[in-house]
Length: 139
Image 1 (cartoon, rainbow, N blue to C red):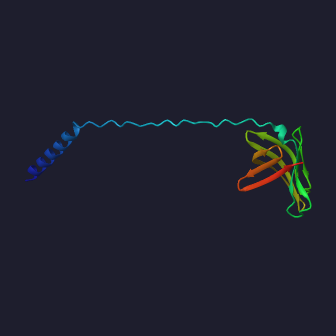
Image 2: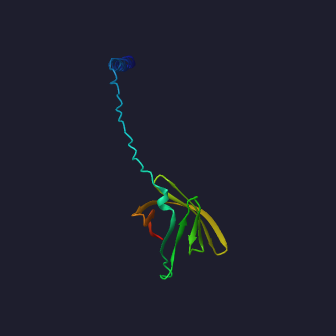
Image 3: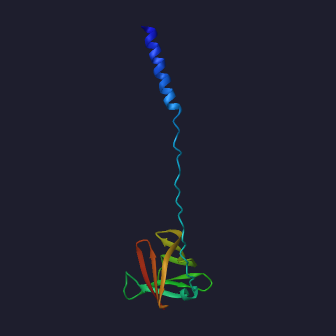
């Protein structure tokens, strides 16, 4: 009886292996997709339009203005902003960069802030940084 069970088990395994032996694997084909990157052309900005004094109403005193002056040599100065000194400026692509020093409570920190910018009719400067949007008028 043991021999019959063992013979049946071996026969079963042989049939199982034989049935698997002739099966061919279906080749797996990879599907590739090509993504085309289209770069938006950046229109060069005439930075000369940015040179000058840009102000906005002072939110603390509506009889005053505040802002900054952008000079031809890349230096800058703050206008009526004793605690925020603007020192330098430059443009890269469609961004205006302002190097500023925050002075207050006996401490100071230097930071460079980038803004998306738009000059409208040479007299209005819109600056956007995230959710913050400021508008300045050229003097």
